[in-house]
Image 1 (cartoon, rainbow, N blue to C red):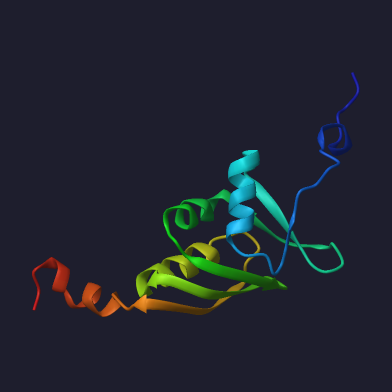
Image 2: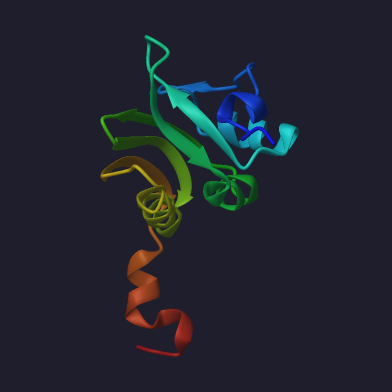
Length: 126
């Protein structure tokens, strides 16, 4: 019996996204094609990272307009989210993606709810 190789089971038509693609693009690919991950490529088509389904729930449930650029494992998030806590969640989720070594957040938000969350205002505090 012949041992199967990666060549036997691979898909030669690779679907990828650029390092400067809006975050929505790989999420749309994940959903449309039922992929579990999409490779991220640089200008020379070299793979520099992977976007996995781990970020999908966050971006599908929010009206966020976020762009992620990745260089050598460092991801820069820019754009706008609804609340400050949403930006924190986006940063935290991005940090958990395999291959990400650091995340720089330049996200803007319409409302900063983080102080209210930590002051206990929503939990009967002062």
